[in-house]
Image (cartoon, rainbow, N blue to C red; front, side, top):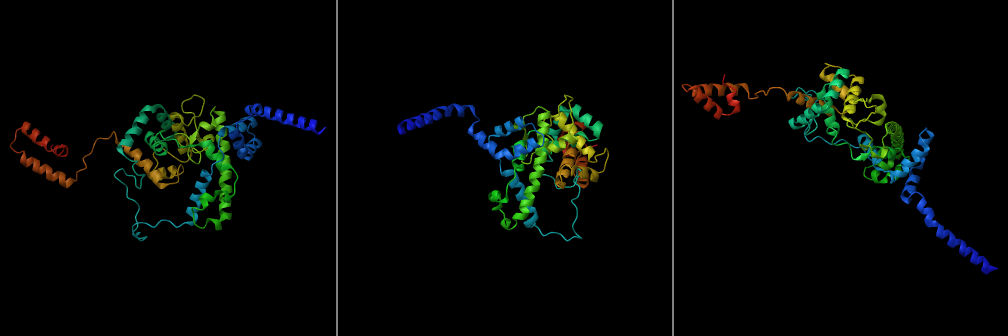
Length: 372
């Protein structure tokens, strides 16, 4: 009897092992099943909030990677540093409050500081070419919202270099990773880099909870945008915090401010016309008005990005674009011009018109401008 039982058990084990490869071949690949497990809580939460179960499960299965710590770790490091770490000491001794002055306006009429290497003639020429290529969209944006083409192009240049740099991350993966609930202890790699973090875990835990909820709301907005416009969320590039498109909108801003600029029935912020109309609408709804003061323009641009340098850079680049069509003005100091003019007139006295022309030409471009 024992022999028969052993034989039956052995046969059963062989049968199971023989069937195993066939079952494994039909199932989801191992890396996907493991990944889906790590995303399971987030996937179920989205389904509970009304997202299609089949599409949502497939999306997370296709991610192919577990959640990244980088978005949350980077944000907590930024918040912690701003809150608890001393600010770097200035290299020069700061002036007293009575002597401290605001940055004076440059020759463009826009005060600094500006982002290094951004306000240049070469970059202005790129913007000018971009305006020419998208003249219809810029004209419509200015007509509807009063935003000059130069300001719109300058903003797109600062944000994404006119669409040539759209971010190194996948917007969905960044926001989904940040949405996953986790403890401060799971961020040990980031916390160890900063002094005093282990004594402030309660504060860190609160910030992580806040940012996780913020990312979740942005994630929902992103999925709505992608699935309503026929886009695969896994193919949408973005910043580490999920900003996307030429104009770098956060997903929650798409429903509020984005516009179909080319009339194709789809809002695509990676399309220049849509991005141009969308950023112009954003500025308009945040207070931009045609002919407003420099101070007013700076205030509106700082609602797009809170940095003063950001606003000043855009306006300085916009002014540089405008000046491309202006006649070149001689910048030689007046006293130098007068002295040179007097010298030329004396030296060329008695010479024929042809001789004067040859003599003056030999003195160079700036000098010839002094001869009436």
